[in-house]
Image (cartoon, rainbow, N blue to C red; front, side, top):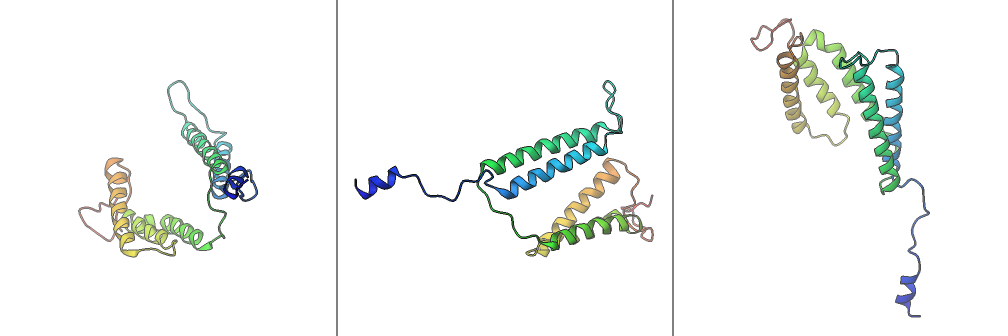
Length: 174
């Protein structure tokens, strides 16, 4: 047999067959399923739908089920598709995202929605090592304007937009 014919008859050499081919998606999908199960457990004591009326537990359960289905889909994709392995854990992203959440929670009342959301978005942007600050500031301005319009005007929520010391017509104090 010729060398070319011999190589076509042999099975291609590849890495050892593994059940899971994309560990990042698989572990991420399992994390989403775990979060969905926690949400279902946490909303267990809330009443559900009565006829066509939504109860306080309907939306959390609905979103938990959708999150669980999404997690199963992502984990299944991790089984059947090739992807990167698990990367080394980075503390930077976790630190800045949690810091942004805590900053927003502490600052939204005294500083108002505009300043708190703008600064929180910039703190979140610092989570990436390769952040581009010009684009992050532009995106923060767009998101802050959208959130201000959505919560204060479209949904009519009584949120203070600016600190009480400001007396601008666009920043009504509630």
